[in-house]
Image 1: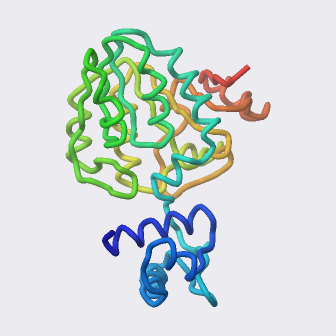
Image 2 (image 1 turned 90 degrees about the horizontal axis):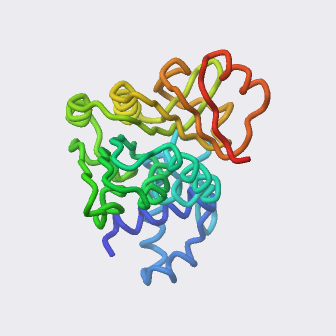
Length: 254
C-alpha cells in the first residue's frame, strides 16, 4: 500500500472514530510505529489531526469535509428510506440528473428496477454502480476529478449539464436551514448542484433529517429552487408550515 493510501484510510478512521492509536495502526498496516507517527504528523500539518500520546484525535476545529466512504456509511437506513421514496417518483423512460452525494448512490441503486432511464451524473461511484444497466443511457459529465467525493466537478461539468433538459434532478446537501437555505461545504459541488436544478422540470432535494437546522459553507439554493423535499423522518411542524407556504411538497415515510 502506498503511503498516501494509508494516510487516506487513517483519516477515514479518524473521521469515523475520532481517535487512532499508533500501536494498533502499526499492527494493522504491517509498518513500524515510527512510520505511523510520520503519517499522523503529516495529517496534523494538514490540519486534520492533533497528535496525542500514543496516537491522535480528530481536529474538531478544522473545517473538514468527511470523505465519501465515511459519509456513505452514515445513516444508511435513512438514505435507503429516502431512496425508496425518490424511486416512486421516477417512471420508466424518465431522464434525470443525480449529484455526487452519498445519498444519490442509494437512490441510483433503488432505481435499478426502472426501465430505459437516462441518467446524467458527475458521480464516479454512480457511473460504476450503473455499468450493468444496459437498457439505460448513463452519461458522465466530465470535469476535474475530486478524490474525496469520487466526483467530477468544475466549469466543464457545468457546461455539460447546461446542454440538457431533464424530467427530474435530485441533489442533496450538507446543511438545510430555514434562513440560509440548503448549503454545501464545497463551492464547485454547490455550483454543479445549482446547474442540475436549473436543468430540470421537477427539482428534488433529498436530505436526511440530520441536516435540518445545519448550515454549511456555501449556498446551493432556497426553497424557491426546489419543488419537492424528500427526507427520512417527518419534520417538525414549523418546517412543514414553511414548506406549505412556499408551495414545496415534503415527502417522508409514513
